[in-house]
Length: 425
Ligand code: PLP
Image (tube, rainbow, N blue to C red; front, side, top):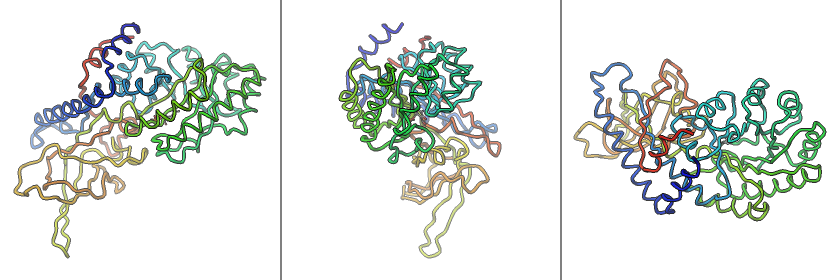
């Protein structure tokens, strides 16, 4: 039960130092696991696909991110954005930790409900929904959902009049990696009309939501969005709604989290009294650093510079932008290669230039245009890439006949996470 989970949490919750020490333990554990797996693979004799790229996922890292969240954003109850990485083990751990879930489709809602999560812990955070999905949410009792336009209100009236609605407002997301406000969010000059229409339709508006853009980098965008939300709360009150919840969306990343959280917490305390429930929809924050990807070098092409007589190499891996490196295209990432294993050469570990390519026949399938690694890598050697947990597997395709369901080896560098993985809500 949640009381037990919470006390367990408190016991393990010894502050920042645990988070930092755990991170080092986690990296070692991941590295060991990667090494052990590739030692079992003989690329000269294995069956097709046995040398496929694979992930190692450290559930302890997801757990530590949760502790870090609780340490820095006490008021905000996270609703993990399933779209970011719908890995069942991640969802199970977060369910056990008591988070909520942000779902954006029928399949995501179904996946979370199948874990035994109560529908009240789900927000259907997609302002432009499919009608049949709205009926599905209604039938399942998933009441919380977002809207940002009048048509969506008419749709809700017709298909789920008792829904608990959050008005999603526009934010300044210009400093983010993936802008969302180009597509979603009501501007402040139309929120009053939307609230009035909701009132006229006798709909139930319960809160305001926003998203400052995925991979946001300017903490002030949170401050401004919270201030704007206060304005909409006050508008709603004048129209006769008693809003109870503010949803601060996602946009958090591991490396800037503390500064974002600090600005956000201050803004919340300034504009929202303790009685207002605050939720968030973090995605990448929870999973990015938990997943590491190992790839095999399947081919190599040598390039001679006629002027300098230096050799550089084009390396071809068995995963690319049509696969788990889809994050390069869709999420504007620059995954960085590291050497996992390499055959012995008399190369004296000299720094060598590479470009790194995926396995498909398309020229766009480029992982890194230029990078320097120590030594000369060869066909059969392995590279690994850290920070591969967010917006990677979920948008991988089967283009050219390559698989998009790579093995995941789960490990846990936190005993607390291991215990919770056996928990069934
Ligand atoms: N909530 C909504 C509505 C989103 O569209 C997204 C991402 O696109 C998220 C949450 C998760 O964002 P992030 O991964 O940046 O935390």
